[in-house]
Length: 78
Image (cartoon, rainbow, N blue to C red; front, side, top):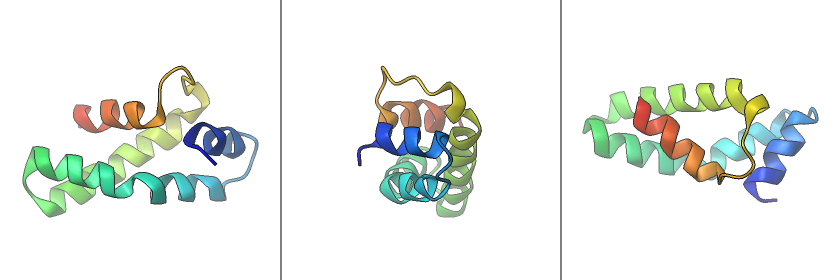
């Protein structure tokens, strides 16, 4: 399943698909955060915050943008 399919499935009630989304992108978000803050503990905290923001905002997911692009926007705002 691609990211948009995972999001759609999650929105239809399959909560386990959000775990798959996290698994697919956790290293990307962590590495991006680590590159910005230069501290692994802070990068872990930021990564968690990013996924919480994504989780709470999935109802407004813009399918015209890639999921990774949305992650990048959220992570860079932290």
